[in-house]
Length: 211
Ligand code: SAH
Image 1 (tube, protein in one colour):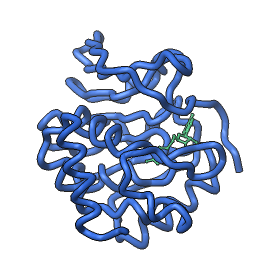
Image 2 (cartoon, rainbow, N blue to C red):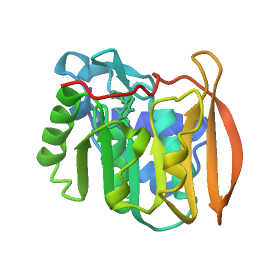
Image 3 (cartoon, rainbow, N blue to C red):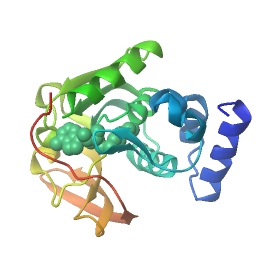
Image 4 (cartoon, rainbow, N blue to C red):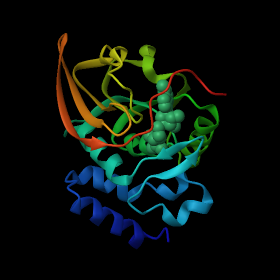
């Protein structure tokens, strides 16, 4: 159920849904998604679906992970990236194969704790984690080549734009439940360019920290 064949079937599905970046598809074929869900759900880890991870949160659907990763990379080599919303840790593990350094911020401590253990087990030593409200990014570690937010705010958190390098991209779902759009925002000097990609469904970006 977690065999190579099962994983490759998922990769084929991602191709059919329009994912074209071979590097992203290659990394998705390598990173074991079943490590990032509870054992009881491991048999569903290679379905193209979001799954519960506790604390009312979910590991994103593989298609969404692939799509956001593809948009984040944009064909460029990435030095450092920030992820807001570590969750299970799966998206961060994918990014760790595509960027030199990955910084990831989560507001729910027990989720972050589990993600850290998974990173250690997979020897992903280039992922750095912090328990914090990701609305504020991680200013000490920025500016970043790219930032990915995996929970949806009602409106753009301006702080994050200031932590992007020139030409850097922010990939973020924005909007209330039922009306969310995935956006790619590119920083051009003090201006930014926004592109709406597709309608999506994410858990909300919330404030504060849960211990
Ligand atoms: N990238 C994750 C997706 C998890 S769902 C994965 O691959 O599994 C979104 C996550 O965002 C949840 O864990 C939620 O707790 C977290 N989150 C929500 N608001 C946040 C905030 N303000 N700061 C940091 N994390 C936040």
